[in-house]
Amino acid sequence: MVKKLTTVTLAMLMTTGVLSACGASEKNTDNNTSANTNTSANANTNNTTAGAAEPATTDASKKIVIKYWYAFGDKIEEAKQHMVQTFNESQDKIEVVAEHQGNYEDLHAKVQAAFAAGDAPAVSDLEISSTGVFAHSGMLEELTAYAERDKDQLKLDDFNPGLMGNAYVDSKLYGLPFMRSTPILYKNVTMLKDAGLDPAGPKTWDELEEYSRVLKSKGKLGMTVPADIWFYEGLVAQSGGKMLSEDGKTATFNTPEGVAPVEFWKKLNSEGLIKIPMGDEAGATADKDWSNQLSAFKFASTAGVTGSLELAKQGGFEMETSFMPSNVSYGVPTGGCQLVITSKISDEEKQAAWEFLKWMTSKENTIYQHKHVGYLPTRMSAVESDELKAHFAEFPQFKVAVDQLQYARPRPMENAYPEVAKVIREAIEKAILDPKTTPQEAMDQAAEKANKLLAK
Image (cartoon, rainbow, N blue to C red):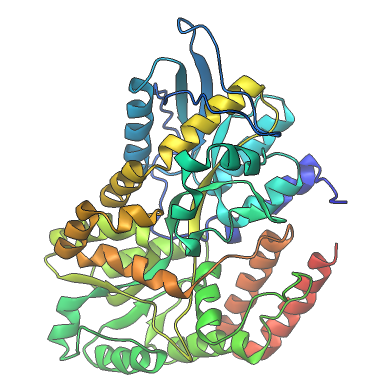
């Protein structure tokens, strides 16, 4: 039997190391912005399968009002607000009140507190690696029966398979892919050309090192990269390794495949080829160095494509994107959020929430949010649409993340993983900062701590 988490335990798990991992470029610029917007979709009248709430049958003169809490501002917020408003205007039975709640860490903590107080939002963004924690704690409505009942309308198999790994917990559906992302490599092509480097690269770790040496000779950095758990997961995958054992009970990041990324980062950092900032502002520092043309490369979420293109235009340089460079192979974690329904609301609210989920994750909205922000188009029908084909032809920077999904891996969802991620990040930083600590020693120590957390 799954042990339910207490309020205190769950709050402790909401650590920055993993909840903010899905992209240094997914910034929250206004934690105080609340948007109360009207939104909704047509109430479904299909027959109900066991486990799914009955379709709403309220008086048309009285709308069902549900709350939707979301993370992040800027263009991400603009897109969500637009979709909510359009949903509300599309029908007259449901009104969605959308409220901004900060970054993922802020949002998760607020949802948990509201749930404990009996006032949780009906719908929330949920960062994918936290799905297991929330599902096991009983906070989420299982969506399997809803999806089966509305299978012809939902078309679950239309979602990109590379994005579905974190939607399920114990083979049960708990979320629908929404604003999903992967880290990609952002390149200042102008800087590369000025240094006599082929802008098609670097495609491998070795090429990244070679490019960085040439750039150093020109007084530039190859890359500014924080010791981010999300990026590290990608490098481990590229080395042929895994973060945890198949059963999720044992750390495996201290194997040669998990140590190799730390050794690589430490070597390049010690030789002044890359810069690894530390602390809470590490991601912001990496973005700043790249936008100020001090670094030629940065790892960042695909959610930053639109914003980075604008920065490049303002800075007068050409920007391209590519896969994260490979080691023994390519590899990349997925990130971003899915939409979930909380469990302690009425059946009427659950049905309204489900209608909203289906609408927000439709082909049309997938295309809209991808073009407006840069998040992955989650549906294959969207990728194959004439509209996105034309968009990719004009802006190939957006298509890179879609193509890279063939090498994607789901993120670990063990209850202890947020704490484990924090331990890993601290170990990487120690290995890089302390000349007396080898990467192997640092990761062995981290694995020992992680195993104790995973065993709880």
